[in-house]
Image (cartoon, rainbow, N blue to C red; front, side):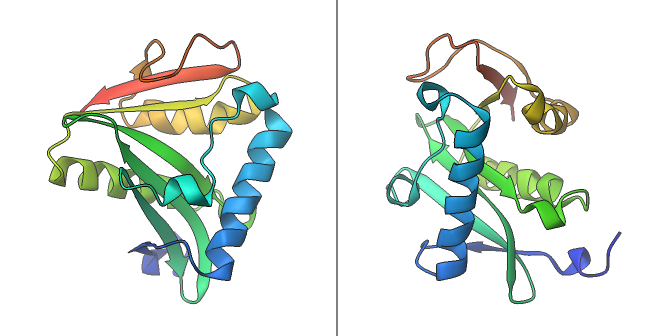
Amino acid sequence: MNVAVDHLRFELDPLTSAPVRELIATHLAQMRSQSPACSVHALDVDHLRGADVRFWSAWIGAAVVGCGALKQLTPTTGEIKSMHVLAAWRGHGIAAKLLAHIEAAARDRGLTRLSLETGSQPAFEPARKLYTSFGYIACGPFGAYTNDPNSSYMSKLL
Protein backbone atom coordinates (compact mmCIF):
# COMPACT_ATOMS: atom_id res chain seq x y z
CA MET A 1 0.00 0.00 0.00
CA ASN A 2 1.19 3.48 -0.81
CA VAL A 3 2.26 5.29 2.38
CA ALA A 4 0.27 8.36 1.30
CA VAL A 5 -2.93 6.30 1.08
CA ASP A 6 -2.35 5.17 4.67
CA HIS A 7 -2.96 8.84 5.58
CA LEU A 8 -6.29 9.04 3.79
CA ARG A 9 -8.85 11.08 5.70
CA PHE A 10 -12.51 11.80 5.12
CA GLU A 11 -14.15 15.14 5.77
CA LEU A 12 -17.87 15.78 6.05
CA ASP A 13 -17.82 18.46 3.41
CA PRO A 14 -19.97 21.57 2.80
CA LEU A 15 -18.94 21.55 -0.91
CA THR A 16 -17.64 25.11 -0.81
CA SER A 17 -13.95 24.72 -1.64
CA ALA A 18 -12.73 25.06 -5.21
CA PRO A 19 -10.95 21.66 -5.25
CA VAL A 20 -14.09 19.82 -4.12
CA ARG A 21 -16.32 21.67 -6.57
CA GLU A 22 -13.82 20.80 -9.34
CA LEU A 23 -13.94 17.16 -8.26
CA ILE A 24 -17.74 17.16 -8.57
CA ALA A 25 -17.47 18.81 -11.99
CA THR A 26 -14.98 16.12 -13.06
CA HIS A 27 -17.30 13.40 -11.79
CA LEU A 28 -20.31 14.84 -13.62
CA ALA A 29 -18.33 15.26 -16.84
CA GLN A 30 -17.16 11.66 -16.67
CA MET A 31 -20.69 10.37 -16.04
CA ARG A 32 -22.03 12.43 -18.95
CA SER A 33 -19.30 11.11 -21.25
CA GLN A 34 -20.10 7.47 -20.38
CA SER A 35 -23.90 7.41 -20.31
CA PRO A 36 -26.76 8.93 -22.29
CA ALA A 37 -28.06 12.14 -20.67
CA CYS A 38 -31.34 10.48 -19.64
CA SER A 39 -29.34 7.84 -17.71
CA VAL A 40 -27.02 10.13 -15.74
CA HIS A 41 -28.21 10.13 -12.13
CA ALA A 42 -25.19 11.83 -10.54
CA LEU A 43 -26.01 14.72 -8.23
CA ASP A 44 -24.71 18.24 -8.77
CA VAL A 45 -23.36 20.41 -5.95
CA ASP A 46 -26.77 21.88 -5.08
CA HIS A 47 -28.38 18.44 -4.75
CA LEU A 48 -25.40 17.10 -2.78
CA ARG A 49 -26.10 19.87 -0.24
CA GLY A 50 -29.64 18.56 0.33
CA ALA A 51 -30.84 17.98 3.88
CA ASP A 52 -31.14 14.25 3.14
CA VAL A 53 -27.52 13.92 1.90
CA ARG A 54 -24.21 13.61 3.72
CA PHE A 55 -21.19 14.22 1.49
CA TRP A 56 -17.58 13.31 2.26
CA SER A 57 -14.46 14.39 0.47
CA ALA A 58 -11.39 12.14 0.65
CA TRP A 59 -8.01 13.77 1.19
CA ILE A 60 -4.36 12.84 1.25
CA GLY A 61 -2.46 15.78 2.66
CA ALA A 62 -3.72 18.92 0.92
CA ALA A 63 -5.01 17.01 -2.12
CA VAL A 64 -8.62 15.97 -2.59
CA VAL A 65 -8.53 12.49 -4.15
CA GLY A 66 -12.14 11.35 -4.12
CA CYS A 67 -15.63 11.70 -2.72
CA GLY A 68 -18.81 9.87 -1.85
CA ALA A 69 -22.23 10.57 -0.41
CA LEU A 70 -25.05 8.93 1.50
CA LYS A 71 -28.60 9.94 0.67
CA GLN A 72 -31.24 8.90 3.17
CA LEU A 73 -34.31 7.55 1.37
CA THR A 74 -36.41 6.35 4.32
CA PRO A 75 -35.76 6.05 8.05
CA THR A 76 -34.04 2.69 7.40
CA THR A 77 -32.72 2.87 3.84
CA GLY A 78 -30.08 4.89 2.10
CA GLU A 79 -28.47 5.30 -1.28
CA ILE A 80 -24.79 5.59 -2.10
CA LYS A 81 -24.22 8.57 -4.38
CA SER A 82 -21.32 10.33 -6.09
CA MET A 83 -18.61 7.74 -5.45
CA HIS A 84 -15.60 9.00 -7.36
CA VAL A 85 -11.82 8.65 -7.10
CA LEU A 86 -9.65 10.81 -9.32
CA ALA A 87 -7.97 8.80 -12.08
CA ALA A 88 -4.46 9.42 -10.73
CA TRP A 89 -5.43 7.80 -7.42
CA ARG A 90 -7.29 4.73 -8.68
CA GLY A 91 -5.89 1.33 -7.84
CA HIS A 92 -4.75 2.28 -4.34
CA GLY A 93 -7.78 1.06 -2.39
CA ILE A 94 -9.28 4.52 -1.85
CA ALA A 95 -12.71 3.56 -3.21
CA ALA A 96 -12.89 0.57 -0.86
CA LYS A 97 -12.00 2.73 2.13
CA LEU A 98 -14.54 5.33 1.07
CA LEU A 99 -17.26 2.72 0.66
CA ALA A 100 -16.47 1.26 4.09
CA HIS A 101 -16.67 4.78 5.56
CA ILE A 102 -20.09 5.39 4.00
CA GLU A 103 -21.38 2.02 5.21
CA ALA A 104 -20.21 2.78 8.76
CA ALA A 105 -21.96 6.16 8.65
CA ALA A 106 -25.14 4.45 7.42
CA ARG A 107 -25.01 1.98 10.30
CA ASP A 108 -24.45 4.86 12.76
CA ARG A 109 -27.64 6.47 11.40
CA GLY A 110 -29.57 3.25 12.01
CA LEU A 111 -29.94 2.36 8.33
CA THR A 112 -30.41 -1.31 7.57
CA ARG A 113 -30.20 -1.29 3.76
CA LEU A 114 -28.06 0.55 1.25
CA SER A 115 -28.78 0.66 -2.45
CA LEU A 116 -27.04 2.23 -5.40
CA GLU A 117 -27.31 2.88 -9.11
CA THR A 118 -24.30 2.64 -11.38
CA GLY A 119 -23.83 2.28 -15.09
CA SER A 120 -24.27 -0.99 -16.93
CA GLN A 121 -21.67 -0.11 -19.57
CA PRO A 122 -18.17 -1.67 -19.59
CA ALA A 123 -16.62 1.53 -18.17
CA PHE A 124 -18.52 0.89 -14.92
CA GLU A 125 -17.28 -2.69 -14.49
CA PRO A 126 -14.67 -1.70 -11.85
CA ALA A 127 -17.41 -0.02 -9.80
CA ARG A 128 -19.69 -3.05 -10.06
CA LYS A 129 -16.81 -5.33 -9.01
CA LEU A 130 -16.09 -3.14 -5.99
CA TYR A 131 -19.72 -3.19 -4.87
CA THR A 132 -19.98 -6.95 -5.42
CA SER A 133 -16.84 -7.48 -3.33
CA PHE A 134 -18.61 -5.64 -0.48
CA GLY A 135 -21.66 -7.91 -0.71
CA TYR A 136 -23.96 -5.80 -2.89
CA ILE A 137 -26.24 -7.83 -5.12
CA ALA A 138 -28.25 -6.93 -8.20
CA CYS A 139 -31.75 -5.66 -7.53
CA GLY A 140 -34.49 -3.87 -9.40
CA PRO A 141 -34.98 -0.14 -9.56
CA PHE A 142 -35.63 1.50 -6.20
CA GLY A 143 -36.86 4.90 -5.09
CA ALA A 144 -37.65 7.06 -8.12
CA TYR A 145 -35.57 4.96 -10.53
CA THR A 146 -37.19 3.07 -13.40
CA ASN A 147 -36.00 0.25 -15.63
CA ASP A 148 -33.09 1.60 -17.65
CA PRO A 149 -30.77 -0.57 -19.77
CA ASN A 150 -27.93 1.84 -18.97
CA SER A 151 -28.28 1.36 -15.21
CA SER A 152 -27.33 -1.41 -12.81
CA TYR A 153 -29.06 -1.39 -9.44
CA MET A 154 -27.52 -3.05 -6.39
CA SER A 155 -28.48 -3.39 -2.75
CA LYS A 156 -27.10 -4.71 0.53
CA LEU A 157 -28.53 -5.39 3.97
CA LEU A 158 -26.32 -3.86 6.64
